[in-house]
Amino acid sequence: YQGCSLVFLDIPNIHAVRDSLDRLQAVCESSSQKKWLSHLESTQWLAYIAAILKGATTIARFVDKGVSTLVHCSDGWDRTSQLTLLAQLLLDPYYRTFTGFQVLIEKEWISFGHRFRDRLGHPTCPSQRSPIFLQFLDCVWQVHKQFPSAFQFTANYLLKLADHVNSQWFGNFLYNNVQERHHAFITRTTVSLWSHLNAVKDNYTNSIYQPTETLVPVSSLRRLQLWSDYFLRYD
Image (cartoon, rainbow, N blue to C red):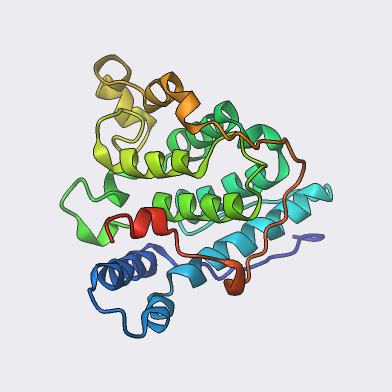
């Protein structure tokens, strides 16, 4: 279209991300300390995180300049959700509050049809399993690490989210879309994760919180870190 620019962000697909996490888990579970950093690098996990952060920052920069931006991946429910949510998180301090972050996840992931059931591996379909939502939470953690006072919640809040996405204790992340959840009467038969977390909000409130306008994280690999509280918690 005239007046439009097409920008490819070169973010790997679900299969590459799944293989990357499998390699990362093998490295983290190994008792050997030899060549730890080189083995970590070989998983490509942080390189993929860097690509997403760079893409989200690019989108946020366009939007901040008033440029209309259309984001789409192969299907529209994996990398698209990662990028659009992160871009909004960077642009608007409301989405860095408890309520705003929950609203954003409900909108960009749950309502817009991320296939949680397939991606979390609940059915026996290994080829569709991929830690896309975990990867997104890792990206948020990286931003939180660089701007610790910009979020109303602590990093432990992200850790709790990562755990409960897989626990199947709450209805938010069951099934693949709104229609499936509606037919399963999820709101009647399960508890919302947000109700559970909001009841203990004080446990995750950031004592140094100061609302900040637009965030511009550094996506260089030299600034990124392994989310050790998640991946090495049993080390």
